[in-house]
Image 1: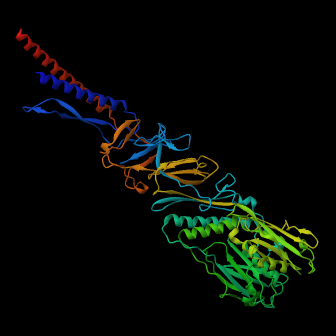
Image 2 (image 1 turned 90 degrees about the vertical axis):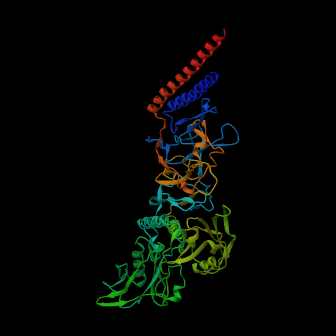
Image 3 (image 1 turned 30 degrees about the horizontal axis):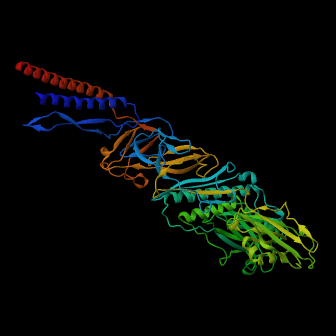
Amino acid sequence: MIGALWTGISGLSSHQKALDNEATNIANVNTVGYKASRISFADQMYQDKIGKGSKVLDAEKLYTQGNLKVTGVSFDMALSGQGFFTVSDTRSSGSSETYYTRAGNFRMGEDGTLQDAAGNKVQGWAMADVDAETDVKTTNPNITYFTNDYTKLAASKIIRHNNKIETITAKMTDYTQTATADAASVFTGAGLKTKSGKISDVEALISEYNTKLTAYQSNPAATSSPSIAQTSFVRFPLDSTASGDGDQMYVYINGTKYSQSFDTDYATTMKKLADQISAIPGFKAYTAAGASGSIAETTDDAALNTALTGGALKIESLIPGKIFTVGEVAEASGSITSVGSVVSTQGTPAVIGTGFGAVKSAQEALLKAVSGQQRDVYTTTDIGTMNGTDDYTYQISIYNADTKANIDVPTVALAITNPADIDDIITAINADASLSTYVVAKNVNGAMVVEVKPEFAGYSINGSLENTTTSTVIEKNSAYSGWSGAGAEFIQMINTVDQTASQDSLQLRLDVLNISDSAFGEFSVDSTGLITMKQDGAEYAIGQVAIALFNNERGLVPIGDNLVKKSSESGEPIFNVNNDKTAKIEGKTLELSTADLSESLVNLMVFQRAFEANAKSITTSDELLNTLINLKR
């Protein structure tokens, strides 16, 4: 009877725990990500084959999938499948404690990190720091992130590699406002571009840049090789019969005829034909001197003077890898057609690049079209009469990206002794090793043009030409000087999420990440946990939520606040690259509690009856004991 008394007490105790557990399930029926728990009963030790009551072996969490509810809240996430969000608590002490949760009602904390409702920081693969030296290509070395001035989006692509995710984004200032036409009196026949022509070039190169990025995005493992722009040379026979009204010079490019009626002389006619070709989006054309010298040289390729024996045009594509076909080249005079030719010994065939190399080639070409090279123009009127007895000096100041400072090139101004004409000054500039590193000087239609080399496109120079004999500073011609491109600024940034790096808190503010001077954007998360922030049309991959797997989920220890922690029974968390084979993440969605109210109410009644029955066994045992005691009396 005493045994029955203690057996009843054990039943009361175990069912009290069962009632407590069920009450907890009911209390958390609306708790996000809550997993219902159940009590596992067991009988106790036996004596003479008679048990001594019951006990609670375990109150185990049942990690079944909860229903998903679409909330529309950007930061909300739900796990559909196996796994846990990882969070870190650094609020109570300097050291961090790592916990796990199924509750995805997240938010942006005051410091810009992704946090749960209790302020714990969500862990994952964070975006690597942007290295201004290697990750940013810009025409303005003082700007290494996107500002409000960059209003034109060239491209924004997210590239998924095997173990990293990178975003390639390029923006420009408003090139439609900064583009100006080249001075026709100087640059006719020398790649002359109108304002609309420069804008069209930029837009053609934006399209090509996006095409190469899309190809790279679809196959990031492709072999990297650069694209090369095509350059072709055509030669006209310069037949003396072509000299009157109705006569023309023409060339077919990609099946389209570009013709110019004879105007004044061959030099003028060919320059105007070159200007027509330069008006094609993505093309430039230059006239070149033949052996007779009848066409003034306006190209930077001096070898044409000796390589070609007749009037020639240099036709180049501004788009790397773009193949064009040159058809018939001829002069027409009445019924007589004098056919020229494509100079097979000169020029460069187009090479279509692959992988990132093709992207880089397209980016460099776009940068040149957007910004271009600065060109300082000095006409003979600006320089004045050169009598071969005056001395001159020349020097430039250019921004050096390595030292991040303006430097004088050369350190001491170049001395030019007794030049007889501008060609002597040009020769001296090109012969100086330090100057020729940055600029090239050319005689273009009788004017001296000092142009920044293509590899320094977007960098400005401040040139100083002085007649030291007369102490006269010669200013560049402001009406003719300018930029070969659209005169706008360009910046490309590559930011990376390294999935092999250690996990960390996920920063969401774009200004803290050194991507933009504007902090916020449109938050989004995909099924793999990749977090993107969209701002002004550009979408940046800035981190990836890490999903933890455990060999034994039921070994996790609940600690409250929707959190569990690992134990020796659960084992260490397992993380897969790109969250492979883990739960799928649903954005703008929450996982509801798995507590079933109706089931819990039924269980309460069952446990209540059991509790009452155990209480009855105690009172019955007590009555029997009293009967025995009374027998002795």
